[in-house]
Image (spheres, rainbow, N blue to C red):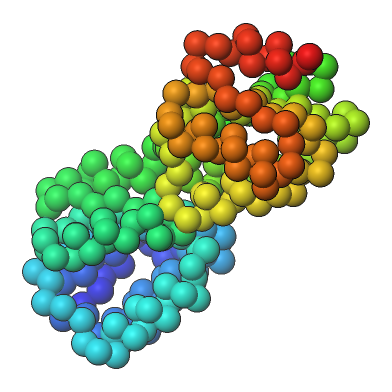
Length: 240
């Protein structure tokens, strides 16, 4: 069965799965609660606590897949508290394919899961360095929601300059949480590539050097990589 553990329409939303999960559980409990929360908040943070789990009926599996596809962009973050080893492995194995951050917690760690749902995983900071140079710092582990509002700030900077130069500061960047965040990042880059004249990446990871090469070939801009301790040199190069 599926039990709704929080009032309908709130986020974070909590549900408990136990015993055999049926199609009726989805239609009578999960779907109405999920749609109410999405209508109220656009995206939902969800805690799923699994206890005494005995699997899904076939119709329930189909309904699970249908809901996932219908509300693919409706989830902001999902925490799963489970002691089912096989299920946990599947969730972790496919975590990069999900549109939002997903984390698995052991039985008894529900409070830790709630804290994770509420905490900030990462942030984006924009700073005008003068002479048409914009510093964009990616910090922590970014999720899709971190990009909300950033496009508007970037648009304002681009409108104020006849072409701009970007310093992408990755010194405190730990990566993206899910496909949704990666997609938002590349849409942001794509939407402003026509105005980009020059780009520098400051960081310390090997893949970041590959990103510079991709920037040259895909975006068609002059791009360079600078080590983490060469921030000032990167700024000077962009302004030269």
